[in-house]
Length: 69
Image (cartoon, rainbow, N blue to C red; front, side, top):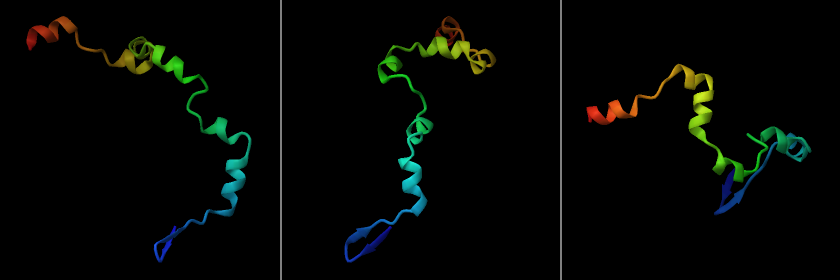
């Protein structure tokens, strides 16, 4: 990026246009191919319990934490 007399000029690497223009670029950059609407319907608690991290780290018992506070 260059600023000259309040003008901004951006120069990109010559290979960047070819990489971004590649038809597979978008699918490689996506985190997921599912529609956004499914994210709102996802039960993250159930997904966490099913994951390896969910099996290693257990959430505290709700009733115990309420009694302690």
